[in-house]
Length: 171
Image 1: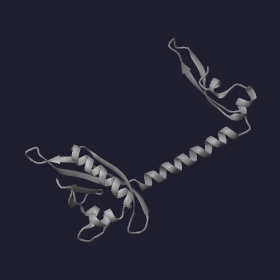
Image 2 (image 1 turned 180 degrees about the vertical axis):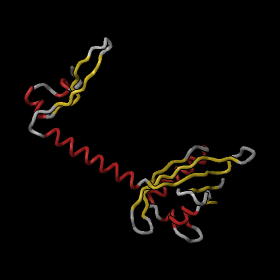
Image 3 (image 1 turned 90 degrees about the horizontal axis):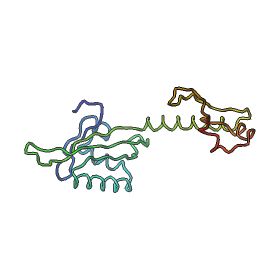
Image 4 (image 1 turned 90 degrees about the vertical axis):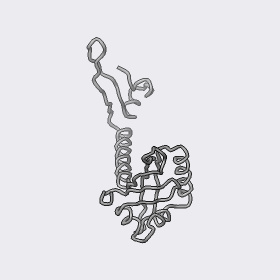
């Protein structure tokens, strides 16, 4: 577990972290109690939410999941996902949680860029002066092909004078 490229943690029945792997230690600091430094990276509001989720997961012996924003040791804001599952001892008695923490910051940045790009092209499509319609070919139950209007831009809608909700999806 120490050499996995993901942060791994384990906590005992009293909610105390009793293991974090080397990846976690490198991320949160090379001191004697890096889990304390990790908690300090989280805002007070998020610490309270996190604590509530942990307490609830312990009480229900159910999966733990939390997204948290932290400021790392380089003053960069990161978004992390913490997730864990209950584990049981050899007598099948609840013994705590084991889980992982992974950084989704780059994924969120990529999703934002995709959304911004989609929004840019949607606005371009909607506002261009040329008439434009996006039409798909559909086949009915009898095997006959027809065209269905999936989307049109404002210029096209204005030219034909029919409300969008009556055009979109029509054949």
